[in-house]
Length: 253
Length: 313
Image (cartoon, rainbow over all chains, first blue to last red; front, side, top):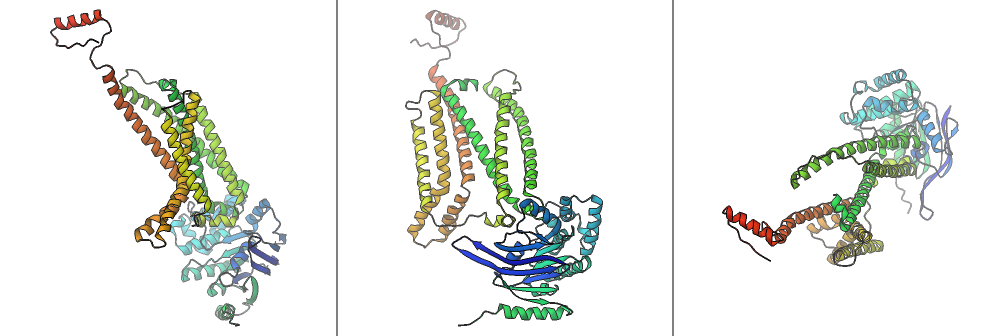
């Protein structure tokens, strides 16, 4: 089942006189339960792609369908409703509210959907146990480490069982141990709960946890790699090779 | 206070002062609100991301602000009531009046306060509404990075602002030097003149911080022709741009402290001159206005063996 289907996405910044095209017609479709990562050099438009796919930013032309619903033409109110039920977000800089405890932060999406308290608590306990943050539930974000913050942020994205989760460089601010930890948990959740995740990263290690890696160059899809039956190590080597080809500066002159 | 209201100058001054107070309070509150909402922009963005509509966020903000404002108004009115009694008691003590300070409650003042705060509240809500409606989620997450103003070249507009600011200040002071010498006789003329002085000096100060400072410093820098000593690097350029971006706050601080210093010196002048005036008006211990009474007093003094000197005019 196709969760996300994007066709001919164009996005340009600037005004009439000074236009810069960042996305030049990207086609993308993501199936249910996939763990996809987008890679590319800085400035290649990967974060912009994630922003437009996740309804944070508007596209210049093209169509984006999530769960068969056209998202580009939605009005503010419908869009908010849509985000509430179908989308989850993880950011590089966590974006937790410092005034709420870990548990309150995680339950925030549920309090907006007005989920009953008992059900919310059950959901929280199960998820927090899986992510290993159950004992932190009464701490404030300032009292926990970066890795724990990011796991809290991930829990907030997963708690309301969205159709798709968008992650923007989730390991960008973490040390390698917390990063591996987080990625392990994320791929676990991906397999156990059949959650669909779309992640932007420039870290090949992070990308090697995914089932599919899409490479972007200058606003277009360059190529994509499927993990298939490979082990993570060989997949990692493949990604590195592709990145080497991709990243090379052409000396044509 | 009622005495002061009776005179022309006194009533004009009190009216101008109350308008000034209202203006300062509203500017300050609006300014504070922009800072607060910018600080919370990330939170607002997050709420939108997890599925709250803009309308709902605005409603929550409005309720929150309403609780804050009504609470502070109620507290302020009670504080004012108690404070006014305390100040009245101090006044009686200082002036030596033997009287009991009654708790004064003016319903007119309360209703005026409520109206002023209501209008400010509506303005703030309007500002918040515009802020929430206009910002996209993406820009809400980046608001913090943009607060420090971009450093640009000093433009023609800025030079004009700078000159206009200085002109405003000069004209304000010129009118104030004319205030007591010439032909402002009626209360309304006095009121106009006073408001003009205050208005032009305050706006002038704002423009001064906004434009004149960087304009003058720019001239200084141009003369240095690119080579700045380390002290100048630390002082000139940073003051230039800091002052510009904080011009509103600096203006408020300047105005309030100028008012405070002005009032303080005015009180001291009147306190000091009161004694001088008394001595020069009535230099003797007793002054009597007819000869019979004077003779009677003289007689009493001689009977009781008290030395005295007498002057007759």
